[in-house]
Length: 139
Image (cartoon, rainbow, N blue to C red; front, side, top):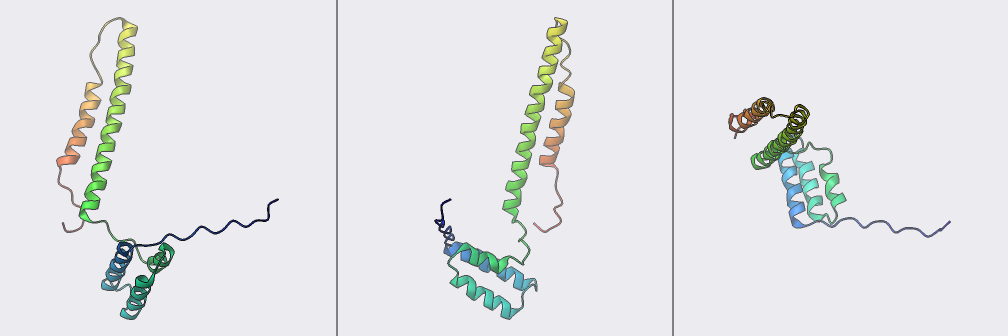
């Protein structure tokens, strides 16, 4: 057995942007009353001196994650909506395959029954895109 010790992985260095993000989270926590002014001042000073991501993570570990911004939420919603269309396409391929196999079995083209479920599914996806949403927060 090898007795050599593996050197620890060096901590990831942070940038000014990382420090600014942490300072922003601390400012929000102060404005919400989660931190008192003295603790905010102490954590902010530590954030400005931080050199590694671990040092910054400790400063906000006991605070809730900030709510996503409007643009972040919109990007997330679009990504989920496009994923639903990929599921729709997968469903269309499977249902069309079943329809095609049935037509081959009968030896003739029959009514394209997948049009009904695919049409309803597509209508729901389009309605989701154009229907106004109440997100529970001001826009």
